[in-house]
Length: 175
Image 1 (cartoon, rainbow, N blue to C red):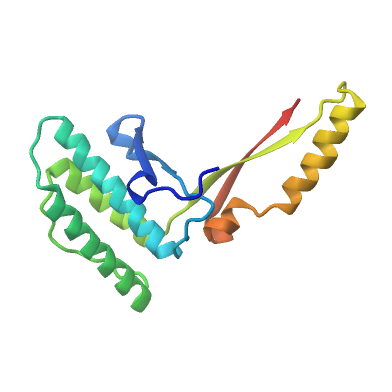
Image 2: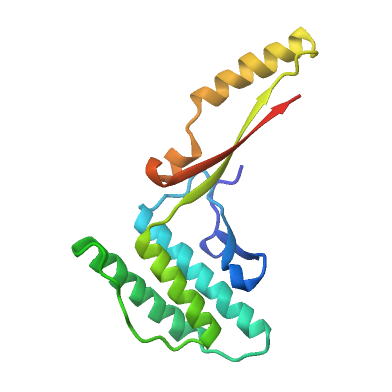
């Protein structure tokens, strides 16, 4: 367990599949002493990191971009999206952007997706003793571990994820 994670190491973004699918794997790490933000701040930071990833991906392909100005522009646009979304639901923000054409398209898709809502997918695992296990192993896993699992705080609650935006993917392990 790590008490605090530096902000620059908090988000890890990678692409899943080919670029035409526009799917990303985002790993977010928090230490147990780190303060959590509200969901709007978290979503904005996540989208900023995905935009930075897209810019770095283009830079790695030997294209030159001015990333600092573009990230600041995206931050400004995200603020507009959040402010206008809270004032007038369904209002789509159309602004000019200065990205490479492929980055521009993917950033547009990200902002439109954020406008329509964010869905969180989390893994949820259960460990159960196998029926052929010894009584001691069954007691420790089913009773002690089960008690600790039921009485610990769920990660979605800890991260402040609304229940209506959560999809849990579960797996039961028989040991």
